[in-house]
Image (cartoon, rainbow, N blue to C red):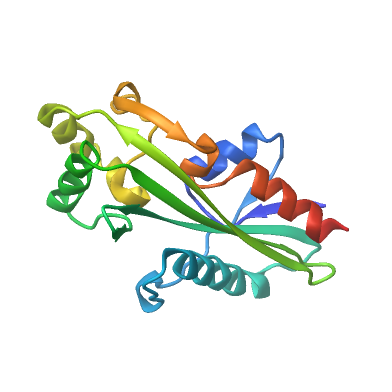
Length: 189
């Protein structure tokens, strides 16, 4: 059955490809700022479900639809994609003091049967202090504005500053491998 990834995220595409799947990309165009919750799990589940619901009417053949959403929690704050350079800089400096916890929710739907499964995975990443000139160069490349928490831990400028990861690296990339595999199996029964 055809697999559709409801995301343009480079991290999610990288993970799904690494999992061995061939897939089509169909981004959901929703206004994420209209959906608000104080709890990161509730927020990411609501957003991943909203993305799936926005895409379902556009899918005309049997498929497995995968949508996801991620936020980063650091020092008690929910961090989404930064909107401005100073916000991205603030995030990246904060990671030298506090771990970043990624909260990633995934929704998988079998469009042929209507079966829907969802779940959330968490992982933590610690960074060593990132020098100001590296932060500046990273922000100038615009990469932070495409990632929850303003970072891609696999980016060449940041990879050497990753100190430790607890949990699946794929979860930090935006698509937890084990959770996604289990949800695909669940809707395929």
